[in-house]
Image (cartoon, rainbow, N blue to C red; front, side, top):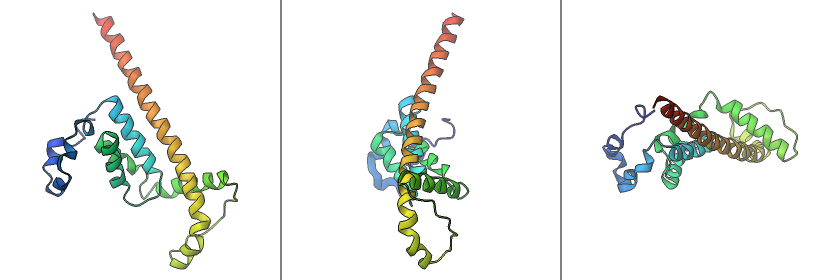
Length: 165
């Protein structure tokens, strides 16, 4: 995994990021350890399931705030990409409608301001309620799963090392 993540020196050399100052010098933003990776999954998976613009920017700020692995948190928001967004957000909408005890409306999308203004509340509220519920659940599961799998791998490595001696 380390070979795919850009080095801190390479990122610091990018002139357009110099306005951030010493923020990018924080070692935890680049470490590959159980805690930094688990927090990156928490942030990235959560934001991937929230319909919002600038998910990558939000993930970067979240990684800086929580000392998570920055490149991984930003990359994980691409779980929701142009191919996966429609099924993800439709599922989130259905979950939100179920949580709000509303019927799932059948609709055909029409790319017009009139259609959007008429449907924004009708679709938007269940969509965001469902998105927050699904995002929270999947982010927590991914965080715990990384913690458990990482610990399991370390224990297995220790056992193998003990048997070799």
